[in-house]
Amino acid sequence: QVQLVESGGGLVQAGGSLRLSCAASGSFLSINRMGWYRQAPGKQRDLVASITSDGSTNYADSVKGRFTISRDNAKNTVYLQMNSLKPEDTAVYYCNAYIRVYVLRTSDYWGQGTQVTVSS
Image 1 (spheres, rainbow, N blue to C red):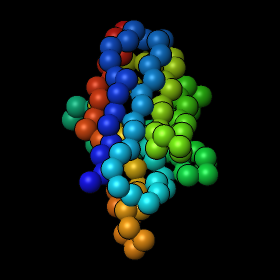
Image 2: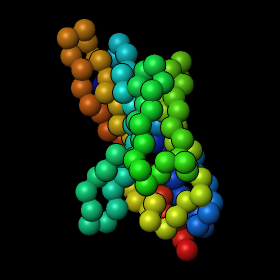
Image 3: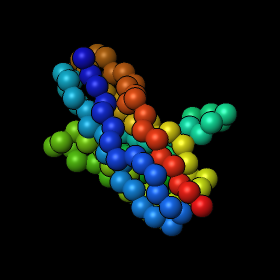
């Protein structure tokens, strides 16, 4: 059973910083892409940033220059460093990982979500 466990959300003032972490545990062969999505009330879940196993990154335009995604492959962990936070960054942030469970099976997994609230 594969699990993604997130940590690091909370309440911060505009202009502040937070660091989210997401660790994958369980039985699997490898982790391909890892990423962070967010969902604000009444809105769809959108990609914030993603990173491949070789370190290639992709960011939503709204967070470029403020957020940095990284991963520690030895720890099966992905991080999201969020700087210069704005009230519009307020959302539930979800970790996502595309994991090869068996040789012929690769599946998407999601964390439980962590709330990030940015006050003005």
